[in-house]
Length: 304
Image 1 (tube, rainbow, N blue to C red):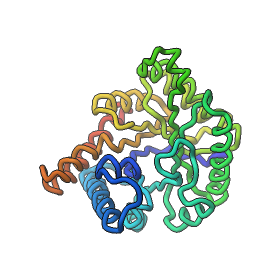
Image 2: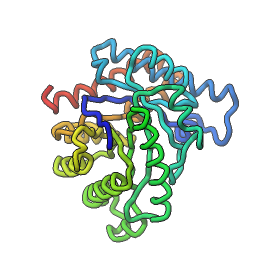
Image 3: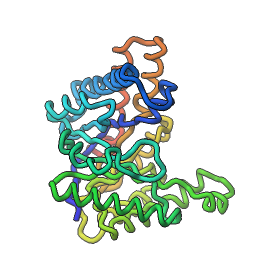
């Protein structure tokens, strides 16, 4: 059974790897040492922004970072030394099917960095490829068992991409899928994974339009004695207005303990800095300000 985590949790996620490499830098394939170092230096800007936001009043005991070992090893070590909440991904980047980044050595990598959370990103549609879902579930249970045997926390980012047949039924209406179909599929996915022995402590959930759907997701996450399990809302790279709405909706629902908003927080300032339109310190302060804004939005809506 999950240990659970039900304290407030405000995450700045920048564990993007494949998408960061290809979309921010335009690089494909294997990277040189110099390219890897350049991406790592760019991620340091985000980390500096996180620290600036803490200095400006974001509560240290509620805020955390999610960053990868490939480009963020130095950041993870520094954050651990400073006692910050950290999360590190276990999945291979940019794959439709979950698999371990470091194969059978996944446990050694988790132990080496000692993150607060081990995080997975999983694409799981209950009406999708059954054999693939089964393979994924077996790997996810293996990780679940390992983490809980060590007293570690499991953060599970559940994405439920639409199947072609589902979109056909909706005549290609993506908004209708997100509003009317995805919430029910998410509940099904959570229950199926739990029934198979996959026990996250925190579910990282795509934005939901209604409080009623947020409540359904929390009820699934917390069913059968899992009452300490928390949910956080993710940003999905959406515009500020959409993220604001999702955070506000989720904040009103007990069981939603916070958020993880990445690209909407850091992408534009980084692009401007790399194009030499703004100095590094401006990029840092813009990212810090945006992160602080999300904390304020969530806490205000929660009535803190």
